[in-house]
Image (cartoon, rainbow, N blue to C red):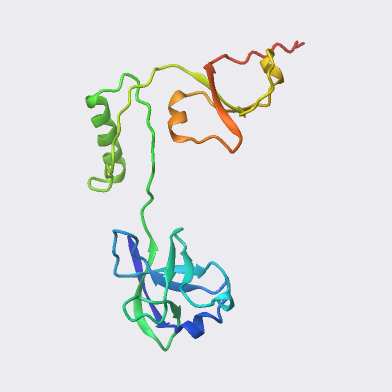
Length: 199
């Protein structure tokens, strides 16, 4: 995690209400369950003039949304860069959290450990962390995963149905939700053969 010192001052609710969506601010970088003693660059989610009591809603450059009461002494408040202010630590960059679903053919404990070991070698020991782990046996086959309208036309000819091809691996179904009004269809995989005559 990289931080840099920035000179800034804390704003009152009246000052925040004069800000627009383009005005850069700093808010606490802490998230639920992860308190951080520094600030993150952020922006208001709607112009401050729309403030009618309650809290201001801000979004950090890291995608976190938070409700902030600038005048609450127990909160870290909203800050803006000001050479006449005081120094604060601002978070510039952090790691990337990857939510991965990995298919390991003939996966066993040894092959998974080799996978983690390779990741630690690539990024450094102690950098790669296993937050949660779920191993599920899946068939080593390809399927055709489609979406089609939940009340699709009753037709024996599947070519006439409205369909959207999504994937060819069965594990994807566990991590997807069908679009509104659509349902998943899983069929044995058929290789697409282009029979267009060529010269």
